[in-house]
Image 1: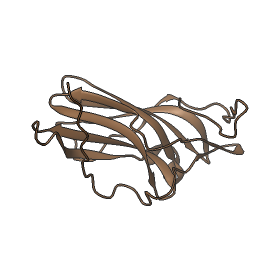
Image 2: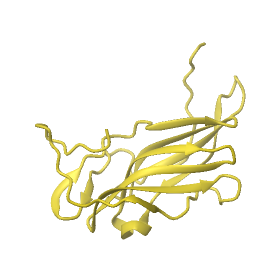
Image 3: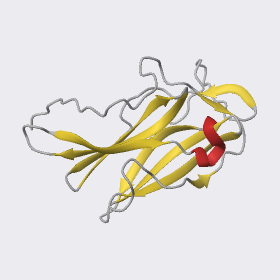
Image 4: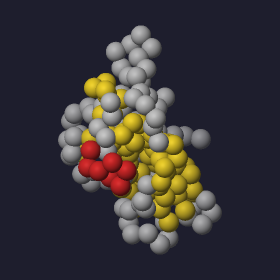
Length: 167
């Protein structure tokens, strides 16, 4: 097989793409959680589409983001079909950062997104949301559900300057 690189326009999805991703605040301590960068974090091929997750900057926060790329032909590999932020403001309001998203999709087109969330009012924890690709409006996910709430501030430096999380 031959791999070909193709750029797919998704429009303006970030507030300020020229800055690094803001580290996430957390309850109880000033140490922020390292958010790393904008690399692709997960991808799944399903029903002639490629679903991907990564992180973006939106209004001074890191937000998990998902994209559905519809595959077209060998001449035009993919086109943007749908996508949106996993804002998760139902967890801790407008200051919620969402981090390190992953996804799974079933045969009925139900996509489940797992992600971490942190905010000045909560400890970092694990959450999930879903979208019904057949019935939900474009760009939307459903309400967040708790997998495991954070129980204490997260502080793991391992002798380095970053408070690493997610990898």
